Every structure is written in structure tokens, then in C-alpha cells.
Image (cartoon, rainbow, N blue to C red; front, side, top):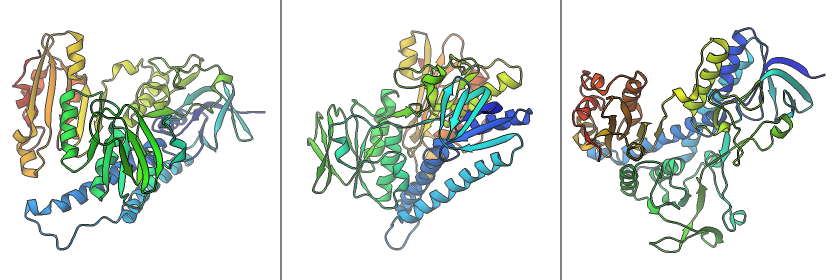
Length: 459
């Protein structure tokens, strides 16, 4: 006979564990299933390990620039990748084990290790065990997509996950994909000492951003000696005596790049193909993402999809927000929806990009009357003092309502500063509230009110 639970959670990313704890605290009997490592992408091969390595790369860069600050470091600057990896591994292991230990010690929660597969709409197999529950929450995340490139199976390649196992500095890392993951790894390993080439099929980097953001980021990474090949319409991989030959059909530059290692950073795919969703009658879209409404409910009553697997967003913070939405609706008598949130995220190159709300292109396309202001980081005192003046700030405001529509801060502390704008947007306060605020000097944030004093019509 199947083991009966009140609630069953499949996957332990950023939504599942916290939802399990809330449900268990409410007196419900909860099972949580994890096939491999607790914590999902963020803890194991996403945010935490990559940003730990970004910190090591930043330290290397600052050591290389020490003379600019009047600091003399005797001898040459070298990077010990085994120690970089060991530091990263220790931080990941502490988080992973801490999460599993917390769940294991929480009353009303039972952990199952293994791959879950639906055998009916509310029954799941985990190895020899059979589990049923009135409510099931799917939080299985996603993984790197592997494109169907010519000869791709004939050469070794890396993904964001296997990059976590590297304890050496590649001689020449070729990154296929010029978006968020590719840019972070590209700059990181350039600072560790690799020659780096980024290959992008599109006409510019991170195509979802405004063109001025893309251009500024291109300048930033090229200034560090990273090669960029744009408009690579036909990419091929082939074995080469010196490593791997990456064929590129670009408008400029040689038709082949010879790298020692290749990183594929061309998108993500959901971990849904082996869940047996068809046995449960759960609908997916053409890409395999589970179809869910704005309350995260699937087409099967009593089944929800949270996090990367529903295709609504692919960030740790959006996954956690979806736990909050479901918990509020089920336990707190609220009526929350993903439509209530303002999209915000960061790109963790150095300097970072913080983004909130609409882009300039989206606002222009909407046809609404808007105001815009920009300010280069060369006119931000804190950036000058730190010797980190790359990038700029940009903000967009509705001319009629005076509400902030969106903002981008590409510059030192941009990933933190963006939150004072984001919070104002959530408060639905007019931009004048922030314009009149007194901020602390010297900070990057203090220039936000000044920026808002320079608003002009968006043309």
C-alpha cells in the first residue's frame, strides 16, 4: 500500500524546503523527495558556488590593480585554482548539509532520497516506495541545455555544472553563449589567467537588455582582454591537435577558434522529462516546462509547479517568492499571484548589473509617455573613490502617474543599489518620494535622487 501524506514535495530547490517547513509547522504530514543534492541549482552549481568563485576572481583582479591604489605586492600574482575550488566546495557543502540537516530535524517532515516518478495524478514512485498525497508540489528545477551543434558529441565540453569541478586554469576557454552565465564565467576565468573567447550567435551580448547596456558590457569585458565574436550564425565543434576547434560563421575574424576547453552557456531546460508527468495528466509546453497559472497551479487539481520548472522565471529569488505565494494562499488566507511581482535580477560580472522593471526598449514599445535619466559612473563620487567608474545608471518614469517603470544600474554596487528603486516601485510611490529622500554620503545610492532630478522626455 502507498504511504499516505498530506503534502508531497518533489525537489529541494529554493521553494521546496521552505514550503515543507511551513506546511509541517501547520501540523501537516509532509514528504520531500530529492534525487541528488539538497539545495537545487543555487546551492550546488548556481548562485552560491559561482558567486564564491566570482569573489576569488575579484580578489585576483584587485591584486593585479594594487599599484593603482598605492599598494605594492612583491612578486607576481598567481591563482591557485585548487584552493579556489576548495573554498567554493567548503561553502557549498556547509549550505547543502545544513539544509538537509534542518529538514531532517523538523517534526512532521520525512525525507526520501531518489528520483520521483508519477504513476497517477496523486501517486509517486521513489525507488520501491509508493507515496500519495492530497497536494503535490513540483520543484525540480532545470539544467544546462546542450544545443544540437554539428559534431558536438565528438568533443568534450563543459556546462555550468561541470565547470564547478575544474581545479585548474584552462589555457584558452571558449564560451559559447554571450549571456548571463557565459559572461560571468568568461570574466571569472580571464581573471584567473585563462585566455577567453566568447562566441555569441546574436548581434550583441545579452540581447534581452537595452543596446546601451550591451555595448557598455562589451567594453568592460574587452578591456580585460576577453575576445568576443558576435553574429556567429553557424557554430561547429571538432577535435583539434591543440584542443578543440570551434567553427564560427562570423562577419569579422577568422573562421575557427582553437581552444583548450569549451563551455556551453546557451540556456536552460527543465528537469521534467523523467517525472512521468503524462501518467498524472500534467500539461507541459513545447519546451517541457510545466504549465501553471499565476497562482502556480497546474491543470491537475491539487498539483502545483514552483521554480525553474514552470518557465515563469529562472532565479533563486523568484523560486523563493513562489514558495511565499503558495504558502500565503494555502495557509494565510491570502490571494497572491506571480503577477504581483516586479521582475528584478542581477548580472554578476564586475561591475555588476542590477535590473528592475521594464527596459527602455519595452517602455518605448508600450507607447506610453515616459521620462528617462542616465548618469555615468564617472560622475559618482563613491565610484571614483573606489577606482571603479565603469558603467552607468538609467531610470524610466511614467510621465503621467510619476511611477517608476524600470531601472538599470551597471556599476559598482549596482546589485545592491537597485533595491532602493525596487522598493519604491513596490510601494507604488511616485518618483518624487525618492527624489526628495536624503541619502548617506558617500555612497552610490545617494546619486539616485540626483539622477531623478535629470529626467527628460523619452523620445
